[in-house]
Image 1 (tube, each protein chain N blue to C red):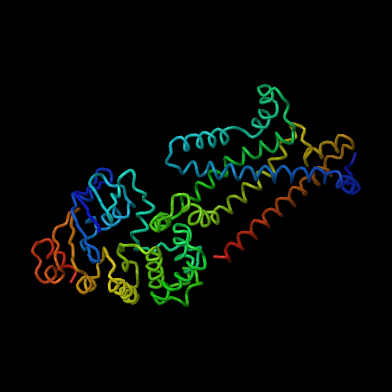
Image 2 (image 1 turned 180 degrees about the vertical axis):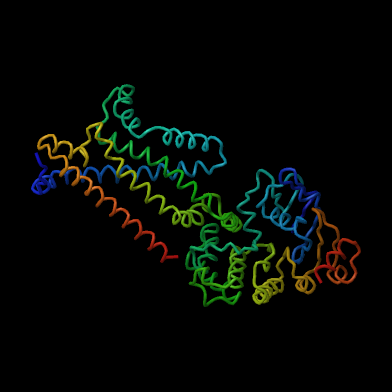
Amino acid sequence: MIEIRDLHKSFGDLEVLKGINLHIRPGEVVVVIGPSGSGKSTLLRCINRLEEITSGTIIVDGHDLYARETDINFIRTEAGMVFQQFNLFPHMTALKNVTLGPIKVRKVQRKEAERLGMELLAKVGLKDKAHVHPDQLSGGQKQRVAIARALSLTPKVMLFDEPTSALDPELVGEVLEVMRQVVREGMTMVVVTHEMAFAREAADRVIFMDDGMIVEEDVPDEIFSNPKNPRTSAFLGKVH
Amino acid sequence: MGFEFKFSVIWESVPILLTGVKLTILITFFGLVIGFILGTFTGLGKTSRNRFLYGISAAYVESIRGTPLMVQVLFLYFGLPMVLGMRVPPIAAGISAIAINSGAYIAEIVRGAIQSMDRGQTEAGRSIGLSHAQCLLYVIWPQAFKRMIPPLGNQFIISLKDTSLLVVIGVGELTRTGQEIIAVNFRAFEVWLTVALMYLVLTLSLSWVLSLTERRLEIKT
């Protein structure tokens, strides 16, 4: 589903990704953990080409993401992105937020798009907020709408960039619950998060990144109970 | 020789001055409509990564902002016809001058508003597959436009008052009409006072319309 080969990314003189190799199978849930500045968000953003890479290859569903002939707008509809800061469109209602993509990108009829949009909002438990603007929603509700929006183009992969980091602690649970539901539906997911409990229960594989490299990857039980790399155990020791 | 304020002068001048007001409104309106279109495109040009688009937009903005409006008016009316080989009607020259001049300032307003938008908005738009143009149109522009209204209001008022400079090319707008009346009755105090009040009414109306627009956009979101 996603194939990353020898990915390097620098911001000026600062190299934030130092040769990443990663293969993600369809339906796999990969959780990326690591200290801030380790490059995990940048890695995720490269998979949606929100960053230009320095060198390497990223193939998403058979399309070379950074090849000249690739229609990047099309690829982006194949990968739904959820941001730490939600990034909902504040001038649109929740329903408009989730119907904009289908109507403008997929040319779906408005009525049909709204029907699908209501289904998505129902799925994240916010059907009654369809006609409300983002500023009247709580952080957790905003993020749930944002997940619905990312799902609105029926992507093949969902990318979550620290989806609960900007939330008050009591609102984290409702967002994780929606994410678990997406996992249950068999979605391929890459999740950058600090929620270790979520990683432990939902991930098929946990990747620990530090200093722009993948230091260790394994099934959650192994990585949490029996980390092999001292940097991994040091990080987990601090988090626990 | 004491000065005696004559109200009758005002009453007699008003109907004539109103013909000037009409022309002032007409020139301001068309000048600003064209100026807004010009400013929108050059403002977008200044946010462009395309070096050619950026270059011509920046050159336009800098050359217009850096030269006096009076010189631009004189150049358009007296200078250009020498090259074109034909006279430009004063009103057309006036509208062009206001359009070209306001366009440069509006470009900076548009650029500023667009660049002040959170990058996350563009990223969210692009991540659902919107093209650059669609993202601008549906996501960025509606939000940026709201931020543009106060500085646009400023510019609109400035441009309205700037039309008075068109006296130098003989456009019969409000200031010119005032001059013509004074040439006949020599009542400078009453006439200029009336002219000033008329400009004030025009600018106050404009502010009022703009604040109404701002409030309506506020309610809608």
